[in-house]
Length: 245
Length: 290
Image 1 (spheres, each protein chain N blue to C red):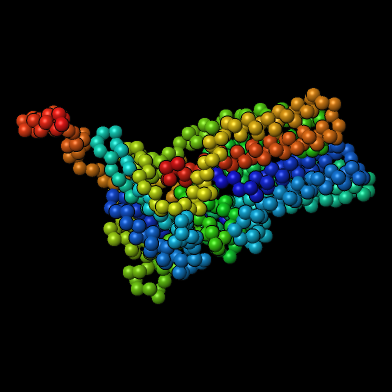
Image 2: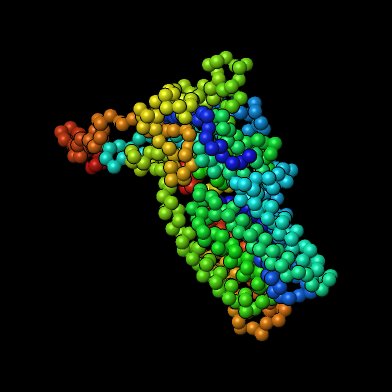
């Protein structure tokens, strides 16, 4: 049923630390590996070894350059997957009932047996979290590794999403964001976590921790200023001699 | 947005078809027998052809019948139900008109209402998407309804009615373009809000997440339309509105002139509807620096 639950007992989601993400794409690879070999249709690739490779991914890492008004630019690696929004517009637009949000833990899922592949949910998502698989013709999205987190056949340390499990820099955290006393909620409070595109009114569960303030050493770019514009002494002679050649 | 041909054919033809069926339901024109048969055949042909085209872009059409189930929240589901309901309500009325020399007027009015409501739900599929600011305005249903009743009147051969409605449609279309141009900025989505990094400074894409293309880029970051937008607007306006108006006002009329006006209008509708999709920018394009 595509009506959103009135409230969710838990709000499971991710907290992504943009300060520590190194942009290695390990989460992208492990996400693809887990989700192509387990629940639902595989994440297909087309022309994977040809001139125009393309494929379905549930998690992608962008890289941006942020330039402050004063000081030097910085690079921010930016992993992006489904934010499991409280007000998920992708769910309510679904005509077949394939898309739904679970009331027990807030995870947004697609029942592939009901999906007709119209793509309207992908249009309704501001974050590009849903991709229609080119081969299977059904909508694929992050399941928050629902087949790992409750899976008692796995060792306990593996009962977290594949992207979180594999992150070598500890930039991804998984937990209940509906519980103000959970580790992830405290992390969001401590680091002033933000919502992506709040103007879209989706109330995302996943939060992003902005990079911590940079060292002020390069604040006014002084260290990057030229120390000499005109050569002196031997260098002045060399400059003159080479110029005359 | 990627203007998939099947979606353009779907929304253009169903609009015209349901527009014509709505006028016929109101008894405009008041036809029976063979004339009614031809007109209803045209209306049903356009509406059914359009609905059939809408299934061509589905990735998994085997599940299309399930689209009738989620009317509580989904405009696409409501559209599917109303379209079928409208065609079923109009059917006995059309049968009466064609074979029995008449049918109860109330049934015709109900059919007309269902036809207009179907076009409204089609428009709401697009108008509900906050992610496409150009579409998410009340102008979208007004525009779709304008095309349906204007084109429907033209197909119904109503010169005076079509003149008034096409003139109205011209104003609505120009208004929709003008207001639409400012919508993205009004909504305020930028790469800064998209990444939450605006508090630090201005953001630009340094490296894309992948070297190839993907579903999101082909589907939602389509840019060809924007390049030729002005030319296409002129072509679309000329064919959909200006030329049919000229034919209606400056020629003696008759079946041939009417048919020419209809063909012009159809060409214009395809151009403006193509632009409706191609020109619309989805906020996800921001993440890709587009």
